[in-house]
Each structure stands twice: as C-alpha cells, then as structure tokens.
Length: 629
Image (cartoon, rainbow, N blue to C red; front, side, top):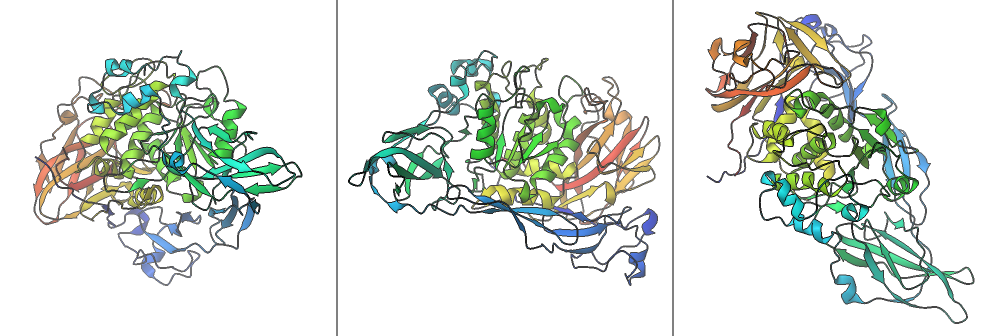
C-alpha cells in the first residue's frame, strides 16, 4: 500500500507544575518579555516559581527558566550590540563579525562578504562548450557503488567488494579522494608585458562573495584542483603581470556533477565529505559548505592530521566548530580559532543499541547544530564511521534526505581505510557496531517518511522541536517539510511522578527525569484527537539481563487500565539497558510500547515499576501513521 505523506510536528504541552511551583502556572509563556526575576514580578503565581538566576537562551531568545517546571519568565528577543569585526574581509576571503546580547551575553557570528577584486578587465576567452560540460568528481568504483541497483539497506560485503569498497586499512588515497576538475582559458597580455603566473579564485556564489583563492598559481593557461562544489561553480582568473599589475577575467561558471556526496580531499585525512548537495523528499536541497563529516586527528591510531589537512579545513572549508563524538580528546583536530565540542559516545558490543547508549550525546550535538553561529561545522569520531555514522544517519534523516540515500552515504565510508567493511546487517565485531540495530529502532517509530521517524525519535529523547526545526531551516534551501501539531510529548519537566526527580546537565541522562523503584510511577496526561496512537517511553536502567522480560518489570496503564506492552517479551539487554561499555553511564532506550485506539480528549498514560529500578525521561503519544514503502 502506498502511504500518503503525513506531515507532523511535536507540541510540547505545558502541564501543571509541581514542587516549588505549588501546582500553579505562569501565564507568561506566550513569548512576551517579562520583568526580571529579582522581585518586580507582580503576579503572585509567578513568585511561587523557582526562577533560575542564570539566563537560558537559544539563537533567537533569552529567558529565566523555572527549576521545578517547564515555565519561563522574562522571555525576550536578544538585544545585540553593534558587533566587533574579528576577521577583516579581503578581496577573495570573507571576514567575520561577532555580536553579543547585552542581556545574556549570547554570541553570534556574521559572515562579512569578500570585498571583491579591483583588477582591470583583461583579454580572457573561454571555451563555453567546455565550461558547460559536466565534470565528474567520483572514481569509476565510487560511481559503481553510487549507482548500485538495489536498496542500500540490503547491500552486502560482496556488493561492496565489486567496487573495491573493502574498508581495508591498506586502502590508498586513490580509493577515497575525489577526482580533480579542470578549467582552461586563453589570455593575451598587454603589449610589453608578460604573465608571471595566474591566481584562480572560485566559490559557490555568483558574485564570488565566498571566493576561495587556490594556493596553486599556474604559469600556463590551465588549472586542476579538488573540492569543487556539486552543481554550478563560479570562478575568476587573474593574470599577475611582469610589471606588478593585474588583469582579471569576468566571473564565469563551470559545472560539476550534482550526484552526492561531495567527496573531499582533506590532506591525509580520509573519509571526509560534505553533507550537502542531496535533494530532500520535500523537494528542497541540502546546503553545501555547512556540515562536514570527517575522520579524527588520529584516524589510523598512529599519526596526527597533517598541515595540509588543517589548511583545507580552516582556509577552504572555513570550519568554525569541531564536534568530537569519539570517546577521547586524542581524536580532536583542535584547529586554531575553532571551538571544540566534546560529545563523547560509546560503541561496541553492549548494550544492544548504539542509539540507546548515546541518545543524550546526540541531544548535545543537536543543540550545537541548532545555533547558526557555530557553522560551518565538522564532526568526527576516530575513523568517521560508527559514532559519526549514527550521527550522519540522524542528521541526513532529520533534514529530509530519503532513506535509501541516507544508507548510501553511510556505506560510502567503505572507500576509506576504516579497518574493515561496514554495512547494515553485518555481524558486529571489535571494530564496529551493526548499524541495522539502531536504525531499526528509528524505523519502529511513527512516521510516514524516514524524516518524520527521525524527528519523532529525537523528540522522544528530549530534543526540543524548536531546535529540530532550526536545523532543518539552516540546512535546507527551497521547499521544506512542514509539521502539524498533533503529536504530544512530555519530557522530564512535564511528567508527574512519585519517584525521585533528578536533573542532569552533562548529557549523560535526560535533562530532567524520575528515578522509579518498585510500585513507583510516572505519568503524563495529553489531550489527543481520536484515533490510533503510538505510545513511546524513554526508559533507562542499569539492568542488562538477557533473561528478564520488559513486561515483568514495568506496567503500562492508560486511564488506570493495564495495557499489553507490544515489546513486553523483549529482554532488558535488547531494550538497550545496562551500564554503557566505555563511559559507564546508564543505558537508555526509546521503547515503542504499543499502538492504542483512544477517544478524543485527555488520557493519562502511566508507567509503573513492578521490580528493579528504572529512570523515566519522556512519555510520548504520537498520532499513528503508516511508514512509507
């Protein structure tokens, strides 16, 4: 059956606050600015909230949060200062200006366009037919893989071997590096002058405001180089003459294949590519030049990234933020002038799902990416495959890349020396996880497209819808999927419970959650439309028993009536629980407990512990939709 696209969003419901809030709510949550929390608030209800003294903020607003509920106070748009130029723009290099909010000190950065060259126009001519010919950047083997005539989720090691995508540590740079593109021209120098050499500048913008000056200065009328953008590329050639003067061509355009990925040549760092260039299922394009996935500094456990790699990352790709999703700072590249964000993830044989034990670190990554001032960003682990892989799957999926291409991009890493092959369904070994296990958890979530399923997955681990929407907006050019407001999600702050309330600021657990022991419960009361609903619970436990069943340790109730748990016969190990292997955190899991027909109105969803101890971070109720075929 072909399902129609069902468009959705998450609506964070504001429930009655508990603890210091005494069950009152503050009417100030509409987003209007409030008076400060120093005592000038007139509302007696507001005075009963436990307002933080430190500002909370996102890219657009700042506010004071209540420590005991999900209410906010003093919410207002940032009041930016006049800004300070931190990098002066030059003729072919953009500059940068930094602003700070006068109230909360939130910082943002603005790219200042390159000033453009002031050279006289010279006598340049080009072969227009040649410029309009589409140039290929992928090798023959890479093209074979990219045109594989089967779903990538069912690819095997044999499929990869056909195109020499073995992932072997002995693979040479010719396996992973993109092919060069070439531009030719003719130029006649003024009488009495000769050409010393040429300067070649190129970029993605038609006015070359983003121009990058290639370090190579050819003395002949041709240049070959790597890392061109997919699609249209703009350029200008400058003749440097014997008397010190310069003449330039008009801005021209050459064409490169539009087939993603934009594979990158980053010195001796393998497994590097731009996440942009693909078409989303809604018909938009993922912007290039904003997010890069790479290997880490010690990709082969022996050497640091070389100076050529650092030059490409800083000067050509112009990265500002490095996200390390490995489990050691030894993998950090630590480029001068960039911000390094450590979001350590585990990988290995236990617990069951990579996503389960890294969900809070994923939440950290999404928060960083929702701030536009952090871009361009590159993220990595050690070799850029397992932990980088799940991050890439969720980012591509969230932005709207179709599922088959999401998995295609994951498998492209096999052209690099990643120790051995990676593909869905491969038996995990000491070098990596089976990606199928954690993708199947996403595929179990409600959604008519993979984008919707990823969106719901991220909502279920506590990523705010505002952050998800912001990432989609930043990364998408053209049409974007839009979302309705039928899904109901209660993160930790909105739950009610007789368990112990706990908070976490290190992304090792949900930001707010409840620790439950025998007979303790956590509940959420959403108001829903009539129809079939999916109930999802974000649970954490240190118990990784392979014999104890989920149905034997928790009970699900709706309106005080016990329900059958759809995955009740799944053991705790397969539910993703237990202590994590490397960083020794509690293992969490997004569990779809079942599908239930509900009448329109309010319904109380309740999780009760029968035995052992559990942490509850989120209860979610989603409109049930059939996944797309």
